Structures are given as C-alpha cells and as structure tokens.
Length: 264
Length: 343
Image (cartoon, rainbow over all chains, first blue to last red; front, side, top):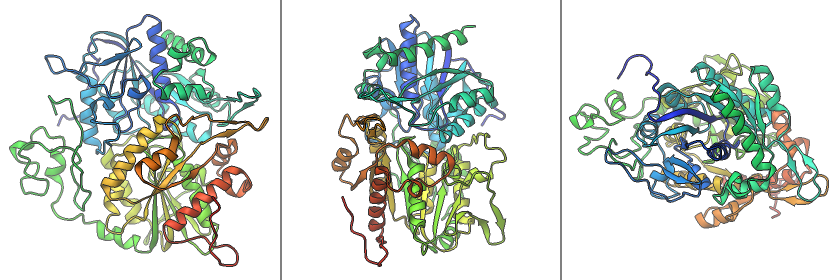
C-alpha cells in the first residue's frame, strides 16, 4: 500500500473535468448532469459523461441507453456508448439487468470506480462531466484524490434540509482543492399548468443565501416542471426533446456559465 | 478484476457474524475463514486481501454487547430506499412523532446517514449535545418518550463535511448500537442513507441476531426512482430483511389556487403501486406533495401535529397504522379498541 496521499493525475485524453455533485440525494444531479452535458455538446464541444453512482446508476435510463453493453478495445479498455452526440459510461452498463443490486463495501467500490475512471477509452474529449452519487464518502474521496477535477457544480433544492448537505458538499470540495464553479437551484418553483399560479413547494431563495454566505454564485435556477421528469423517464432529456422551451433554456444558460468559468 | 468488464456480485452474499466478502472471490480463494485468508498466493490483487488478513477469525466480539443493548428494544424498523431524496428522513421523523403520540410507548430514532444527517434538523434538535456517561451515550430527547441519536449531534460545526470511507462509518454504526443507552424501547426507527453499501450491510450484520421486524421502503412515482428501489428490494430479499411495505411519496400536487391536481413526478411506468404488485410486496399508500412539509421539516416541527387535517397527514396516518399492524402493535383509539383502517 502506498504511503501518503495518492497523487492526482489528469485523465488521459480529456481536457476539462466537471463534477456535478451535491451531498444530498434526489435533488436532480443526474438530470442536471445529463442536460448540462447535452447542452455543452450542442456548443460543438466533444463531451462525455461518466456516471460514478455505483449503487443507483441513472445515466443509462436518462440517455436511453439501458441494456447497452460496452465493447472493449484491444488493450482491454472500455469503449463508451453514445447517444445524442455524447459519450457515456456507467456502472449500469456492467450489470446483467436493471434489478441486480450492487451491494459492496467501500474497497470494492473503489476498485470499480478506478476502472471507470482510468480504463475507459474516451478517445479525446473537451469536457468530461462526472455525475457523482449523494454523500461525501468513498466515491467522492477516490475521485477527488486520484484525478484532477477542474470545477464542481453543486445542485440543491431550496429547502434548508437539502442546503445543509449541499454546504457540506461545498466544504468537501474546498478541503480537497477543487474549485467550486457555483450552485444550481433545482425544483425552484412549480407553475400550475391549469391556472399558472406559482407555488414554491420546496421553499425559495435558500440557494441564494448559501452562495452569498460561502462566496460562490448561483449558476441558474430550474423550475419544477412535470415535463422534465416525464422526458427524463422516457430517455429523451428536455434539452434534446424540447430545445426551445424555457426548461431547456434554463439548462443551456447554466452550460454557458460553466463554459465561461472553465475556460478563463 | 483487471481484465473483466463485468464487476458484479452475482452470488447471494451472507451477512453472518463474520465480515464477509460481497463480490466474486478470486479463483483458488482459500476462503475468508481459513487460516490462509489474505495470506495465500491467490489473494494477491483481491481488493479484500487486507480485510481477510487482518480480521480476527471467529465471531465478532462486539455482537454480544449489541445483543444486550437491543434486548430492551421490542420492535426495530428500518426505513430504506435505493434512491436519494425520496423522503426517507421525512418519513422516519413522522413515524417517530406518530409512535410517540401514544404516551405509553417509548420510541427511539437512529440516524445512520453519516454523510448527510438530517434527523437533528427535522426533529427540532439542532445544536443539542450527547452526554456520555458510565451507562453509555445518552440519546437526545425531543419529547418525554422520544429519543434520538445521530452523528449530527457530534459535529463541532454544522457545515463540516464528514468525508469517511466505509469501514469508519461501519465502526460508528457499531457504536450507535453498542454504546447508546436506549433503555427499554417499544419502537426503534432507523433512518438509512441512499444506496446499498457499508451502512446497510453493517446494520443488517449487527442486528442479525436480535432481528429486525422489517423495512419500510420509500419511493417517488417516477421510473428513475423505481429503478433504484427494485435493487433495494432485491437487497432486502438476499439479506433476509422482511419488507413491511412500499410507500409512494410526492405522489401528486394540488394547486392551492385552482385545486387542480398535477403529477409532478409522473408515474410513467405505473408508479409505486405497480412496482409493489410486480414485486409482490404490500403497497402501504401514496402520499401527496404538500409545500408545508418541507417547511415543517426545516423548522423541526411535526407536520402531523401542526396540520392534522391536510390530505397528506391523513395519508401518512393511514400508512403508519398499517406499519403498526404489520409489527403486531395495532393502534388503539381512545376507548382502547383497535382502529379500523379506512382505505
């Protein structure tokens, strides 16, 4: 076992790495990660997305790649699957079926993650988006200790319960020297399709308060719209299925800001 | 694992008294319990090599201590989901408050989410401290008959992230079970983090002897959540945890203005009800979205006490009655008769 902290390496063939995270579960990391990756791809960037959630991989479903099986190159590296112009790799592609759980302790998770990080043949990418799982444990430590991450986007819903965990996520990235690009406020407001009345189901303005306090900024706000959910379930993310709607613009604006910050 | 593209655990693992491997063993593995475990040539490269080499052979020495503490606990209920953000902690807090409404019952709430401990905030116990004494750690009491334990009480600064690897988290969970002086409890409700990892394996392993009454699974209606819940159901079956039922949270939303109902997290594949029928587990009910729940949780108030007439409260109480029935402690109304469930 090596003594001391592992050395951070840049991923081969990848220019910039962006981590989409939140220590809280269910705030929309995967949805934001997929729509962000697709928006960046629409800006003529070569984009890949790596699903690091070993226990609950959602990316195959969101990109309509469920059931896909990746091939290997001659040197035994995994070849990512593609859809909508974005390359993707996920633990979900390596499981026999949708229902098999991955019930592993930390060490096995680390091994699998290392394979997903280092043994995928991305074949030259401008940006790799990492979809992190909830929590601040093995997966997050392994990723931030082993590879250079150029920026982190923290997703949260407006309520305090989620923000408490999101703040922990931000502090985690500060501790491991990963620059925090900003926060995304997800599920910010619900507009009734009947009468257009706005309801803040999960509170409001919470994310702004946190960014003010911690010295970062709000990259964007995404409304709580049933379409985002149904399109995600169908494997046709909103920026691809309905690119001219306000929902899609919300994601595209965030992608623009991320690009600006990555390439200063 | 270097050359294979499949990295799954396809064999059912057994969570016995000895720390077990939960992945395919290398060829010629001498066995985790043998004298050569971790030291044989075949062990080189196996990620579990260090665990095998360093763990003492024989039953876990702390299990009898855990057994003794848990002897006074009559019913243990786990709240699980594979997916994050579906409302496990919210539901755990409601179960806690609802059980504690019955002044004769002693209730405990244990928060196993080490990275994102939400229970102190939700139960209105932010900033409280744990006292350690000769008889063990004292839980924090938020009501006369409702005590709780969480790592949230042990952090100097609420913003501090807890960046721990799995083995350390398992160690803390063991302490929660072994060192906390719960006393005699009628119900212990355990909130878990999302996923199927160290925390879930450990709590199952440590409580195997004393037995868990069962698990309540929480989900939201959309397929992306159901995907993870299916895995969790499989985990429960393989681990021998009885599934008390499935709760579908955030089911629908009634606009306060026009009273029109919208399905924000649309059940594109039938939602929780279809999943429960498919996997042959009881469906406990659907809970609609109510903006006031989020606020009540943020302020640490009991939503059921503040807004007992909300359709959400009624739905939750129906579910809680079924949970009590399934553990053999049906609720009684004021005359001492069993309450009939209105469905």
